Structures are given as structure tokens and as C-alpha cells.
Length: 173
Image 1 (cartoon, helix red, strand yellow):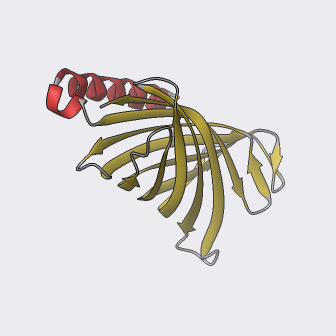
Image 2 (tube, helix red, strand yellow; image 1 turned 90 degrees about the horizontal axis):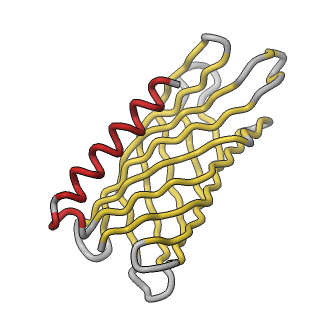
């Protein structure tokens, strides 16, 4: 839990530093969302995700994100809390259509599974798409759906997960 708090504090400090710079602040978006993750035979009903993106041009953005999803109870015969954590960075292509803003993105990074002290971190590739509906000049609601491919090094091979987000997006444009 401490690592989550540290990450959120670091993200806040970085975002406030960017907002203090007028040139960069005009191109910064920060999102916070509820996350539902579906893995084969397992649903993670509780989760959240934060992301930040910085505009490179009108339609291209660099994006970074951190998310965590949890499931309590018995999973695969093991009692405990199963936690899936993801972090990574990539590219977002966004439209600036008036009234709504669809986007597609691809994130490369790490996915960590953890239960009862056991932890496994592997490479993930996550393409996705979403749409933001503005509520004002600097606030919007968004929904997003992602496909996550997790590459395990053992006999398990790779896994296909699906993720759904719903949240708020804060913009400085």
C-alpha cells in the first residue's frame, strides 16, 4: 500500500510541476478511474487506475499509467487477496472533436500478480480505446476498454485479459 501512496504523491508532484509550466500545462491530461479487470476464470471487481498524458501535437500524446485491481476470497484454491498491478507508458492518438473526444492508445509495461507474499512480474502489451465527454472546459467523464496481453516466461505462455475503466479526466488545454 505504501508504494501506491508514494506513486500517487509522485504523480501529484509531477503534475503540479507541469501545471506550473504554462507551455506544458496547456497540454496535460490526468485521469482517475474505477477499473474492472477480467482475466481467464477470474474477475477483479475492485480497482482503480490513474493516467497522465502530455500532448506532442494536436492529436498525438505520450501517456503513462498505473492501475491496481483486487479480488478477495478463494482464487484457484488459495485463500487470500489476489492483486493485479499494472504500470507502463505509450502513445495515445486522440481526436479533438467538439463535444466528445475519442482516442486509441497502446501501452507497454509490466503486470504484477501478487497473493499471500508470492509475486510475479511480467511484460504486458495493452492496446485500447476510449472516449471522453466534456463536462466543462477542464473536466470530463470517460470510458475506456483495453485488451491486455501478458507474456509469462513459464509453461503458462501468454494470457489475454480485458479491462474496463470509467472515470474523470482533468485537462489543461
